[in-house]
Length: 132
Image (cartoon, rainbow, N blue to C red):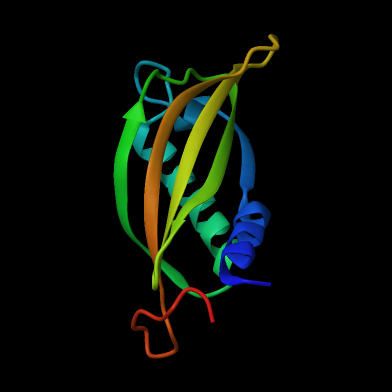
């Protein structure tokens, strides 16, 4: 299997979906999800996808342009979908979308999206190649 095929196969396997419910304890005074909570959930989903891709220790090194298109009210269901979008020598960039749906309707639409970059670490805690 050539390197491009290996990367494509790993990217497909690494897609991660996490479903959560927005309970009042995670909301602000507007009764909508705290932005920091959304970012933490996104980072976690991205970390899982990146780890599933390379199976190496990783650290988050950046988050790129997170767009909060709409607020997410308490009492809704969200689905985070994380997909590896770029593989560098020692880094992996993962795109995450948060979809929101009301509990008693069949609608689902994107509310938040952003990208997170991780670096793989070797036993010496220094960057190491993602593959190999």
